[in-house]
Image 1 (tube, rainbow, N blue to C red):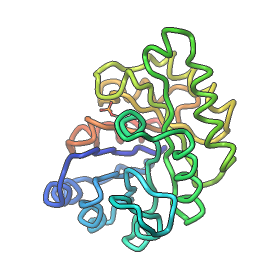
Image 2 (image 1 turned 90 degrees about the horizontal axis):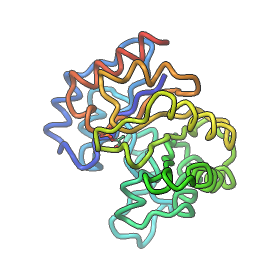
Image 3 (image 1 turned 30 degrees about the horizontal axis):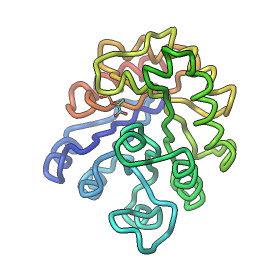
Length: 231
Ligand code: PEP
């Protein structure tokens, strides 16, 4: 089972190093840490599996503020999150750019956690299935199934809100996503030590992408332990 810590724009190198030295992944779980770019090197020092939070599709070029897959690989980073809803919402990420980033990263030998998920309005107006289909097919059209590709189902209404999809909702969405593209699917959206075991024990839930609760060693370890006890 894969449990990924998305630190978002938290933890500079000093805090990242302190976390990384204190954290030990329990046996039976693959723990992946996704720090901000400036803290990638400090997190790698303790031997953890480290992914970036984004990656550009070009190897190099005039793309101010972007980072490429070969640059990440040179550092020892082995994967990247792509298409997080915060990037879609605040930074103009589209299904097309998500697909381009995903394809380039996989072709460069990085693993990818590609994020999909519906907004509350989309869910409430009955568009969840359509939205997930469009988002997943954009990735599938470019890439298909690939051993380095994992999807994350992150309902936008559950990210950083304290609201969690019910186990039933997660089960249903994961099965739907897998019917579009049969790759492992992580659940993301207010995963905490208290709800991790129930969510992770649902069929078709292959791990978790954790934001807020990944910032403290204790809570992230507890989530990893919940996953380990299921595997
Ligand atoms: C995320 O950042 O991907 C996430 C799911 O955040 P949170 O766990 O805080 O909802």
